[in-house]
Length: 208
Image (tube, rainbow, N blue to C red):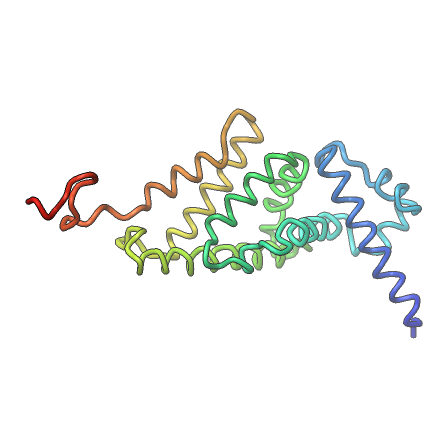
């Protein structure tokens, strides 16, 4: 049975690896990042690095999980369900600053569609969390009359995520594509039409 000290050291080393890998992927991207470089930067051989993970695919998935932990610390979607759309746009805006991690995410998310992929559960859970937060927020906005109510809130939540992901792909191919602006434009289309009983802007209904 391993000693508690050895277990704690293993956990600490795993966190060190993930932190360093996050930096390398952010700086160099998925294609140019080297496992050897990551390993050497934390004082390990490549085999020693993979000793802490079941495979390189698990390492990549855990790097993305670490990214979420860092990016949403204190202001994640779950921590701000009352304005989940603003949380989504914050994440998108930040992603434009770390193209290497966007490349990693896009590549691994496609591969993780396979249920046997080590990152499959991570992506299933991540999408469920984001869609759930957006759905709750959209439903509250529908109840307040600020978002159109003729479309199911969960469908609108899924569409919001689909637009965000689709714009991310377009941005990877053409970095002039404005991800945040496109998502905000989509959101504006969801705004409820003004009430027919409301007077036009700038017009005093008392004089009618």
